[in-house]
Every structure is written in structure tokens, then in C-alpha cells.
Image 1: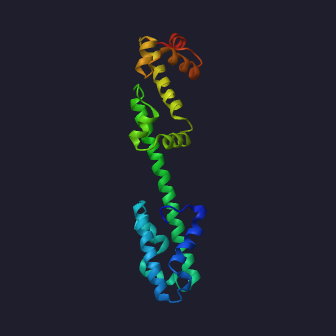
Image 2: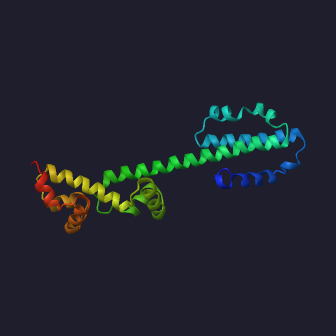
Image 3: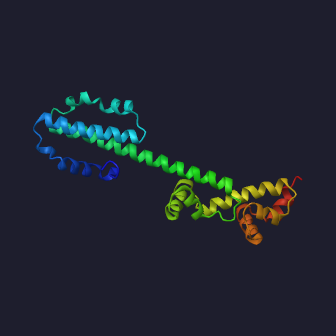
Length: 208
């Protein structure tokens, strides 16, 4: 449950876990300690997989030898264990968020290095970073605010502006160099992002 439960169903899933253990019938403190220790150690190991240090975990929930003080009553035991359960889910959600952000950073680095490739497509990058195209597309838009094609065009146009401004290359040469195989399409996209045709931009900014 720690790997799949969400915060919105956290309490419901936790109650199911207690039911599976027959928890509410555990009048014996010894049995509560036994089951609680098992849950505690499982949660601690899970937190470690997420990069949570033992010191962070024990600072919040104590050492195994400290458990008994939290387990005097059944209700107190349930409250203590629920605190562990909920926090582990929060840590997992945070870790997943960081992981997704890292995936998008890697995708952006890949685009920035390979924007000039004719075969640079959404499918290509999704394969490179190990995600399905549909999931990558949605995640990229969520994290950057741009769809993949918009971002790729922005990178290509930005690079073409540098070349138009600072080199003597012909416009069609620059179009090919930044990844556009159709000169007319390049001109259309360039004007969309800059308000000028490539030639107009070159004439007004060229310093060569």
C-alpha cells in the first residue's frame, strides 16, 4: 500500500491494513508491539528506498526500542502507525515529483543538444528517456508549459536568430542547420515567433 496509496485514500487504505492484521482485536500489548514493529521496520526500509535517511525517520518516529510508549492503547497505537503511513506516502509523492522533474530536465538537455536533427521527434525523445510518447507529451506540457513541438521550435528559432545575426550564411542554409528541412516552413515558423521573416530579421540585425 505504501507504493500505491494516495493521500486522498490514505486513511481508508490504512484502515484496511489494520483490518488485515485483525488490529482492533489486539488487546495484548505484546502483540501490538510485535505487529507495530513489523510495520515500523517496513516503513523505515521503504523510506530509505526513497532517499530518506534513518536519522530523519527516527527523529520523527523514534527508534524501535521507543515504540512501546506509543502503544499503550489501541487507539494510540493506530494514531502512531497512521502518522508513519501517511508520512511515507508524502515522501513517496515528493520523490516521484522530483523524479519527473529530473526526467524533463534530461529531455530538455537532449533537445538542446540535438535540436538540429531532422529525426528529432516526440517519439524519439520519449524512447530516449524511457517513457511512452503520450505520457511524455503530457508530462512535458505540465512541467514546462509548452507542448514538445512548441519548445523544439523555440529552441530552433532562437539558434537561427543567432546565426542570422552573427554569420553571413544564407537563410536557407540556416534553416537546414537548425533542423528545418523545408525553407518555407522555417520562414513561416520564424515569423510566428519573431514577427519578421528571416530575411527581414537578418537585414535589421546582421553585424557581419
